[in-house]
Image 1 (cartoon, rainbow, N blue to C red):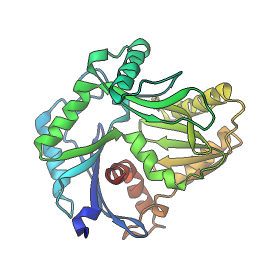
Image 2: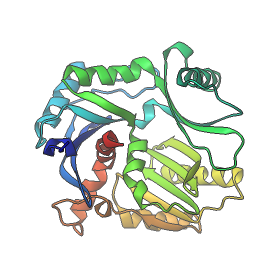
Image 3: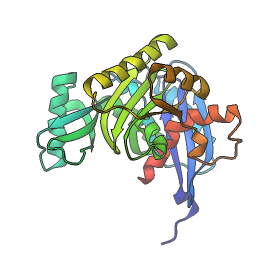
Length: 311
């Protein structure tokens, strides 16, 4: 069966408090190419971020912004990958001595655990999980994403109203990491720090297996932000002193790559690498132009959402 051109073209969006970022990418033999990327801001306060209550304050303005974003793309849009705000879900690593055989029973076990620790109501929790066991471990380890069903369905239903089918819905930080992940080595103890204007994610991998995750809402200033990053790293070192991080990779949606590298190198003795987005996706833009770097930085979660459709 021959693939038609539009089968290789995929669309992703990132929904944030500020607006809708959309990216359209094409799969080529040698990698990915960005066909279009853009952001349409919300005209006023349209979203109020909360993991307990519905976020969309004005459905009319939300849908209008979606329509404007989609209208700018080069190809017809139907199925999409979606990045939802990091703040509206909880992500954790859960350990179990053993797991039930069926997926539904596993989800019930996770939801019960979430109800105890995070006070999520069992009957209204949406659960997704991924096995992250390392070789030789007796216990079962899962990376769990949990959110309130009504909150997530509100986003999904408004997209469907605009004839957009969300094929994959993930937190923005997961899609951002998936965009950058090919730049991370498989061996050794490696950390990835994903930066947003108001949030950051911190992953640690040992020989490709996830051993630590932490997501933190940004403080009121850059000083608080870097203090929170420093405290997160110290927390990791306290609980895993035997797993010394060999290299820290940083993926940023706030650009300022050189400045970020200078700051993070002062926080620890780790080797720090700021990942350049232009090494991961082809564009028609000049990769050495600072404006190009800023634009590509802002698209990483939307691009990761688009790429997730084919995985």
